[in-house]
Image (cartoon, rainbow, N blue to C red; front, side):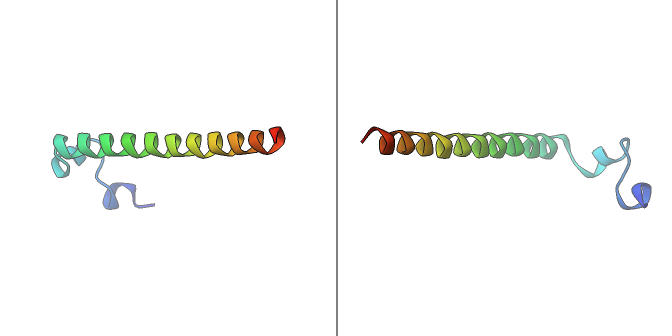
Length: 57
């Protein structure tokens, strides 16, 4: 384990990563996760609609 040497601890990581970059990364991750969830919901909805269309016809 090299938790202290490889990765800076909670006090010093802000020295390497300014707050603007951290918030930018957080917003980007949030946007990507929402995009993935939305895409998954769209695929499931399209699948259900096509399945219903097959059964209805």
